[in-house]
Image (tube, rainbow, N blue to C red):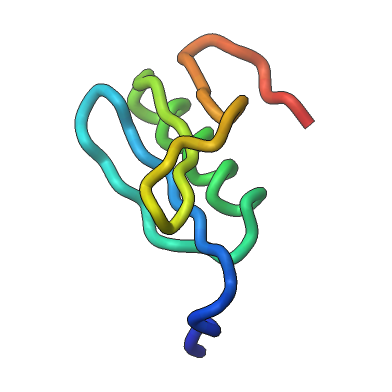
Length: 68
């Protein structure tokens, strides 16, 4: 299944280890991947768009509760 080129894409990224998650069309899916990485490795993560710009408010730090 291919993604439409005009749609926004998001991916989780790690500040500590350089992990870059796969691209998702939905922000919430990329945010879930970032939370999973934080939970598994205790690293600070965030979500970036297709231009590699950090999404404001997407930073996840170890020990923080998940916002909905």
